[in-house]
Each structure stands twice: as C-alpha cells, then as structure tokens.
Amino acid sequence: MTLADARACRILVADDEAPARARLRDLLDDCRAELPLVIVDEARNGREVLEIVAREKVDVVLLDIRMPQMDGMETARHLAAMERPPGIVFTTAFDAYAIKAFEVNAIDYLLKPIRAARLLAALRKASAAAPSREALAAAATQPRRHLSVHERGRIHLVPVADILYLRAEQKYVTVRTLDREHLVEESLTRLEEEFGEAFLRVHRNCLVARAAIEGFERTDHEGEAGWAVIVRGTRERLAVSRRPQHIVRGVRERAGARVPPPSRLRGKWKRHPPRPWNRRLGATPNKAGRRRPA
Image (tube, rainbow, N blue to C red; front, side, top):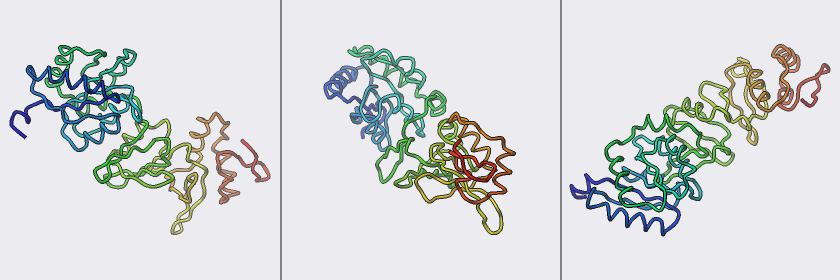
C-alpha cells in the first residue's frame, strides 16, 4: 500500500444489482480528481458487507437498502455494533426510507440516479466526520433480526427467532439454538435492552426466549431447593434465580392469559411440587391438584 492509498478514503460498494455497482464505480472514478479514494471491494447483500468489513479496513459503505438476505437498514444496525464502524451513505431509488436512514445515523442519503457532484459531497462529509461507535449504537433503535457470529474468518447470521437462550460466560455470550451453540462478543445487558420484548431474564447471567419457556420444575442441588426453566425442544434446564411465578406472570400476561395470583401459585406448587406440568404455562392446578386448561 502506498502512502497515497493509506490516506485515501476506503470505500465499499454494496448493491445487489451489477449495473448499479458499475455505475457507482464510474462515479467514484469521476470523484478521484477531487478526493483520494480506494474501492476496497463490492458486496451484493448485507451479509457480504459484514464479511468484508470484518476483514478489511473500510471508511465508508455506499449501501443500497433493498437487498436480499439482509437489507441495508439491518446491515447498518450490525455495523453500528462493531468496534470501529464505517460511515454509511445510503444509495437507493426509494425516498421512503430517508427518516429511518438518519435514525441509524447515516452520513447521507442519495437517491438514484446519483450525480457525481452529490456523491462527492457525501464522501467529503464522511471523511470530515467519522461517526463514533457510541453515536451509531445509540441511534440504532430497532432490534436486529439476526446476530452476526464470527467463526473462522466468516460471518454466520443467526436469526433471533431461532434463539432459545443467551447465557453470559466471561466476556462472551453463548447463543443457543436447537441445532448448536455460538459465541458472540456482546454484552448480555445490551442484548437484553435490544431484545427485551422477546427474551426474559431468569438469572443474572441468562436470558431465555419467551417462546422457548415450556415450564418450570423444582431442583435440588446439594441439598438446596430451587427452580429451573424447562427449555422447549431440549433436555436442558436453566437455573432460575427467583421464584418462577414472577416469570410466569410476565410470559402469560404477554400471551393475554389470566394469571393466578402469586399466593395461589405458591400454595399449589408447595402441595404438588415436582411434576413439571403442574407449572407449565398452558395449565393451572385446580382444587383436586389436577391440571385444567388456562
């Protein structure tokens, strides 16, 4: 790399249509006389953007919005979570996303067909003010639909809807799906803030997907009684750090079901302890100790 290249603005072009990428390359060539720049690479979708940014130094992403696999808005939210996020200039044929674009702190929003002078102005703006990770993260208000997992030089996208639970382990968080486990280097607290609508904290180090809570059962570890979450579709049990009727209330209220008062739950659970489905979310015990639909 020459000294000129080191000082140049490093640009990633992202668009699912080859003619659109070619058009942007031509426009960038027209801008070179006014602004030193290097085209680092090209991407056809958001997933490729994340893979390239993970391995290359990128200053600015020229980012289309309507792309397959992962659109530009979600891609921007993933970029915001990176240690040193690149600047984002949206390039699109649709003006309907302009407000959302600036909610993720985009540097500019260019409507196609793009003129060279307009592109040059956006690149100069990007070079003058590289947004901080905190500013981008604070502006990324919509939760992601995927978590990006870095494994062996590649990025795997894990749909949030497939996640059973998130468990903090030292500086990593284990992401558990039905198929396997992944590790992400993110804060459990931050994940709870982002995905609190879909996940429930059952322990200081664990968030469980509301849809994955099948029930609860008593545990007896080294003579100490407690409770554990039954995770749907697995044999796993996750320790609960408080009495589970509070968690039942949170899950059932979101489902629109009537929630028995805590005192009633405590009394029945004490008299009929350990069969798991005395405590499953779809049934409550009647006076005879039998289950009846909620």
